[in-house]
Length: 173
Image (cartoon, rainbow, N blue to C red; front, side, top):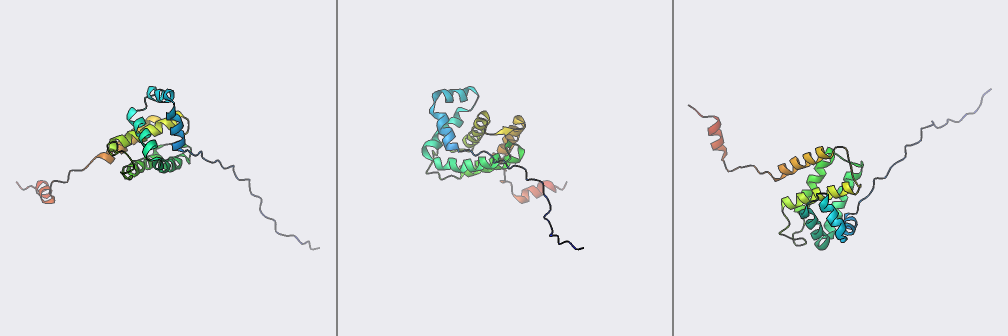
């Protein structure tokens, strides 16, 4: 007695639901936030640096397209829903990208590494306050950001020639 059976497909467990990471439009968020003097005052009360707020206002006015690029980087950070040490390289690249922005579009006097770093930290603080980013250990992440930014701004003195260095290392008595 021969039954004709067709091979059945193996039963697979259902796929876990996929969660879509929230997307941030910095231009919209910051425009709405900075329209209200009360909101700005609230940010200052929460220790958001005034230089960071001034930089945000300048970008909103002179180069909103720069905020689009920054939004993309922030959305890369948001993919896992948490700001952690893995995201610090993205923030470092963000500083580099802003510094390489077309200088005709933004205020040249405000475009310094110090101001850009304050700006990036202010953006992160605002996103934390507004619950767009979660953080596992805020102090650790900001400490690593500070160290990374310090390394970014450190220069190595190369004025000493190689020969001088070798002579100093292999000094004969």
